[in-house]
Image (spheres, rainbow, N blue to C red):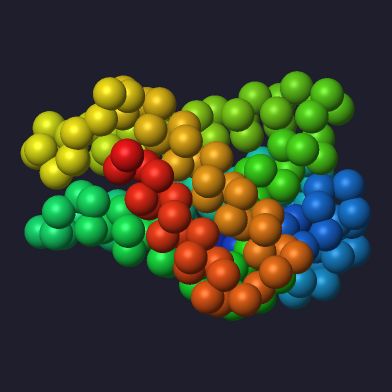
Length: 193
């Protein structure tokens, strides 16, 4: 049997962008062959059906996001300073363009909720992991006495996640960089109070 001769990560990232732009239902195999540059037989042979490609694209998305997050928080800066930089990074992504504003996980869960329990379970798991990762960083900041709060790290992370999704959603209708950065700054300040 012949081995696939393409960059798996590249193909999954291209598929991920298509799903982010068009959504799960409107991303056809024809669109996937177009964005990946692969023939239908190669796509089916390597990944199977559209659902399998989607699940692998989600996996790639999470892997890329985790690497970005880990690199950002793996430094000598105080956690709160890094967290503020992270919010600015979210704003920068929102300014870059329509697809960059969208979180693949949140867009997809609202689309497939109730239609596919397996996909919903994977998406929920990834969203919960994101919240927990933020909670770990917030707990470190609390442990380092960078700030004090009457709320738990998990409660603060949940609030932060809600705000990040809110910024991304707001950016779909208003991409003014100053307005988006002000929202991020307000979110950061609200987190500390």
